[in-house]
Image (tube, rainbow, N blue to C red):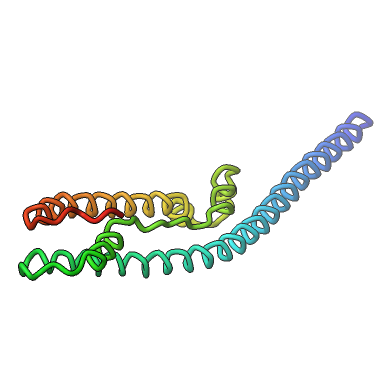
Length: 171
């Protein structure tokens, strides 16, 4: 009978120890999820602030880009209509506006840090993290497209000017 009581005591101690370990694991997991949620909120808030600055920079770049497009369209209109070329200084201004690349330098310190440290994982939703990680590449793709279009346009415009006896203005 003494063995039965001793076995019961050992069994209850084993149950208490096992329950304590499981409770500790559950508390640790809960605490870790709580910490990750907090980090996710911090990363989201920092990214929101950074993206406000990015939006301002992209709007500025868009406005500059639209002026460059307008200048290029004016040059193309001149070429298509065969109109008389404007004065050299006006032509130089159009060429400069069309030739100069649009500079885009959006802030990305928070995003770069979140990517390099893996903090994007704390943002719920895999697709959001993937989009955030890839958006700077999209900006670079648009920049390259603009460079290619500008180069192609000038491959057409420069010979057209030469045919009319006008050297391309120095810009």
